[in-house]
Image (cartoon, rainbow, N blue to C red; front, side):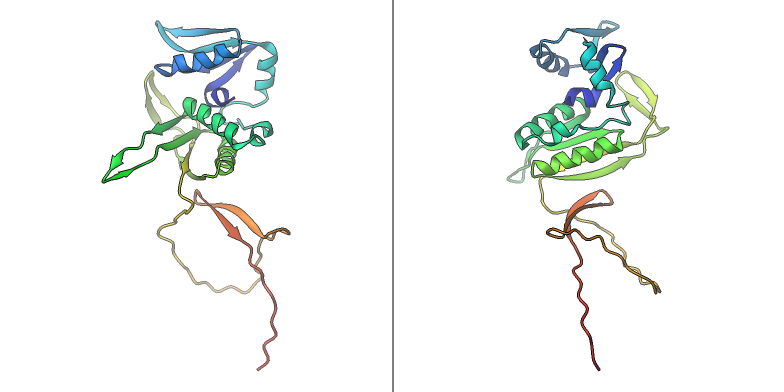
Length: 223
């Protein structure tokens, strides 16, 4: 599912997973281990991915829509952190990046893990999974729509903006350049409240944080 949601599409009864380069062999080993009927796709002699013929599986995968509509099913969201980690690694293998950490000034920096998708819903789902493996997501929206982007197989104009989700190790998020503005206001003020624990998980400008409710009481003040 990680491979498909990152790089897959359905054509009739065929599931097509687009991938090329050194990643091909690793992906092929996984697909072959599932006993699927697969064959390599080659363009000008270069392997560009895989085609899997399976009518039942194709009909199921069609329900996840096109690239900008895809989402992660609840069955994966309800898995243990161990299996969620496997899914995230598979998705990132297809549509993400891993920058290996390096030693610098005596410190050993951890790998930088990033995920990409054109689907807002899928981006939200990835953030939920990152939270469930005890990490913190951070979001950034690349304005790629209509922009000419150079790829290994040519230059193309982007159809959609791209969500970039970083998997952060730190438990703290920082917002810079916050501006405080005082305005004249004379009306009601509202606050979201949860019945149990009064704790919300919120996202603001791409930063995700835990937030408590405003617990208020009315105290009479007698001059």
